[in-house]
Image 1 (cartoon, helix red, strand yellow):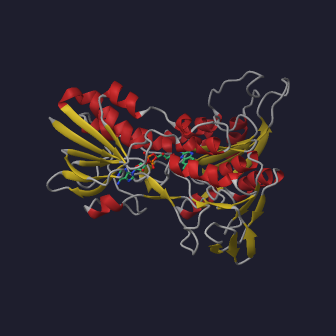
Image 2: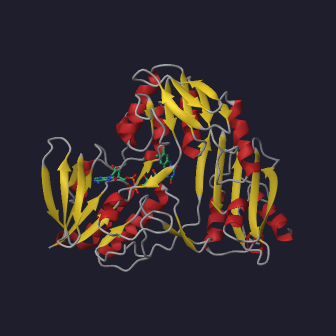
Image 3: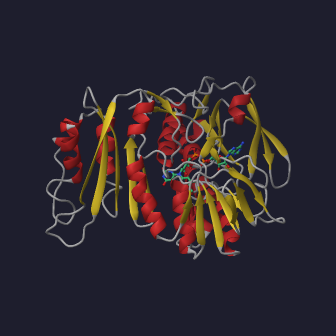
Length: 446
Ligand code: FAD
């Protein structure tokens, strides 16, 4: 019997475990080790648990360990941390975090799905009570409890998690301050687009301070203030939301090759540089189809797909994960915020000669009630008129509309191709000339 050991029991790990078991059945013994107390949790919904929209941590769980074991015949070991891998002899050492006992488990295949960790700032006082990062369900529970005491919440960082959490804290009646080093929120958007978001966030009473260097967190056991180059900010709790870095320590120790991004490098089958070791999710980089090289964009949608491809290949198929185009959507207060491909700034940084166009159009026909403006920005390559990226922001119709452009990027369309697309129209859903077509028309003339 072949043995597969999976490290990490969330999107990538469980997708791989399920796919391999489905293909190999009783001829493969699959075990999943997860160091937290939860598996199969949707970190993406944690802001909605913290805000109170979801009432219990269990609401974040997609499939329980009991269901997983029963339906898929895969034992799940929660609160079990893999502390050592011996690749040569093919085993892992696992520490039971409840009783402190160690055990050894042999493998023929290993799936590393250790995900990412929230970046810290590396300043004094980060270990004070009330200073948190958000990744696991335990983090979400701690943040929710922490927010109960006091009124003032400081968020360090203005990316999508920081902004989704700003909304959650406002829902809880907190006074929220966002501290940011750069002058722009959402750095993977172009400035004119992120300004729309910033205006929305400020309109909800959130204070945004830019150009801020955080020097330390201070308090007597529990955080009381954030010390910065722009003075002190009172804080009853703090969320550090500076992005994520891949959890590659175990992989690194056994000599798995890392890519230029610092995440694990894999081939299209999600195989690492060590033949029997596969990986996927937030600990790996993915081939970016617009850039034509690997990029590190840790998202759940990618983790699920890459995990499944790893499992299929472990299970004997030869399937490929073709890559990503950098699509991400978020709800920030009353706005749908969406992007795919490259912003103008990112295209420039990649050495591509590009231009941007920007339009504003209605989400529905003017002959139908409701509807809101959507702002659309395209990034287009000058010489070839290839679509390089798109951003959309509006109160409705922006988040899912971006998928048309994600598909366009996936198939390498020019803006002329996008302009000719046969998109659906009915007054309740879109104008006859959809905002996508209006933007494409402007971009092709650009
Ligand atoms: P993870 O979810 O990080 O899971 C890895 C697991 O491995 C962890 O549970 C960890 O405890 C475990 N582990 C690590 N080391 C060991 C070890 N040595 N032994 C045992 N276990 C170990 N993505 C989207 O696409 N859309 C969204 O809207 C979105 N919103 C998000 C909102 C928030 C607040 C957060 C935090 C993330 C969000 N994401 C979103 C990202 C998404 O949650 C991740 O991309 C996804 O969870 C990655 O899955 P993964 O399996 O690779 O890693």
